[in-house]
Amino acid sequence: MTAFLVSRLATLLPVLWGVSIVVFLLIHLLPGNAIQLFLGTQVEMTPAQMDELRRLFGLAKPLPLQYVDWLGRVLRGDFGVSLRTSRPILPDILARLPVSVEITVLALAVALAIALPVGIVAALRRGSVADAVIRIAGLVGLSVPNFWLAAMLLLLLSNVTPVASIGIYVGLLRNPVENLTVMALPALSLGVALAAIIMRFVRSSLLEVLGQEYVRTARSKGLREPLVIGRHALRNALIPVITVVGFQAGYLLGGTVVIEEVFALPGMGRFALNAIAQRDYPVVQGVVLVIACLFVLANLAVDVLYALVDPRVRYG
Amino acid sequence: MTAGRHAAAIQRPDRLPGHARAARPVTLGVRVARAPVALAGAVIVAAYVLAAVLAPVLAPADPLRMAPQALLAPPGGGHPFGTDQFGRDVLSRLVFGSRTSLVVSFASTALALGAGGAAGILAGYCGGMLDDAVMRAMDVIFAFPAVLLAIAIMAVAGTAPATIVLAIGLVYTPQFARVGRASVLQVRGLEYVEAARALGGGGRRILTRHILPNIAAPLIVQTSLSLSLAILTESALSFLGLGTQPPTPSWGNMLAESRRFMVTAPWTAVFPGAAIALIVLGFNLLGDGLRDLLDPRLRL
Image (cartoon, rainbow over all chains, first blue to last red; front, side, top):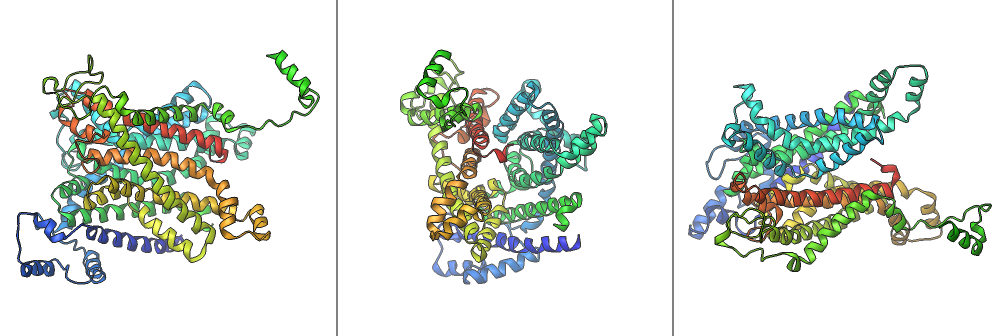
């Protein structure tokens, strides 16, 4: 297991390094002069003042040196300061991190709660009307944009209760009940598409396992059907589902940016979108870096989990 | 019917019951007719493409013409889907919006297929350093959630239509690279490829004549599924104000504009979202159906 972990971490480092280069270059893709963009068109500067600013922002050096400087600071936890508020960026991101992580985790929970039972039923009743309905529902769930679903859920709810009463975000620790009330719709909006993806996978994976010989053996030795399914089939069928969840972590982390905007939740995504509107590019850069790292770590966690559940992976 | 078949059998003795039936070539048309899922998807997609091409003929009104006397008019009368906050006809904006969405998604997916597919196929075929370099680069792009990377690129590079295509194309490139590479690895060592090589076939000839036709199926399926993701991404970008810019209609920016009036004028929000969902469903059906048709091993 240790060897597996080490080798897995070793493949991670080049990816993270590449991520840092992309995030660094992102800000240098800015058409024209970054400083002029920041100042806007109203401010006129003398060339000497521009040089001074360029030196101040560390933009006077050649690009590779700027990268090394920047990476060094990022590794020490210094993401720079916001161009608008002059506040250090990392603490502001970390303060909003729990909101985004909570949406992501809740959406995953919603997705699994829907996908597992429905997928299992579809596989066990293969070819039935229920199966057909579930498969169509799965395709529809896959096709509905999450931000539109969010808007439609809000619209439906507004017929029952005034939209204002849906509530303003409250910290999970401060008031768990109110927090979950506020988070229910965002989690549902984000989770439905993922539920569809996982459900389709659970169905096909279980169908494949049900055709295996050890399932026939379990049946022929007289085990009752619930035991065959529960103890033999499901255990093996659900292992690959972990991989799908890992692949879709990116959907969740990207989707939360959009969903936070729809529900006005104070997460990292909305922080980044506000920063985009204000041309506060270092903040955008910081959020993108943090979310990409989260995604890479989520995939690592999935790999480790997979190796724990399926010993073949570890020794393979 | 039966009589007809007998008549045919007389002309073609090999079709007589006692003979082994000659294998009738199963044309693509026959296979498609047997696959209602792919057919349903193809019909939806074709309808949208037709609507986009014929937009000026089909749309009941000019999508940009404002009508101060009919602001937020409910569906009915001259406006089957109602009007928006400027009195513009929602149906006409939807029809013209299909042009934006389809052009962006087809162009960006073509870009991703061209760049990613070629990179993946070459990486898989050549192996070695090239393989490592290409796939590590793809891993890096893959390490960003697709929507987030597209948002970041649009935020920095501006919202020109070509930029939207480039951004969406880039974020979906790694998927094609992975599919292309994995498929090449599957067929690269097969006998017929070795036979072609033994006969003195050059690298390019083997790739284009022997490998490409045999790995086209997974790439075609991936193309269909990526088209659906591209539509969703374009509309998400436009919804956030980072994609197609008003007043050019796109389903995403129509949804964004409708947010303030959603409760009083739900039609401004319901129809654009439904338009997105239906075309995405079409591409998903097409992708699923094609997978069943072309590659039974991958059946989901």
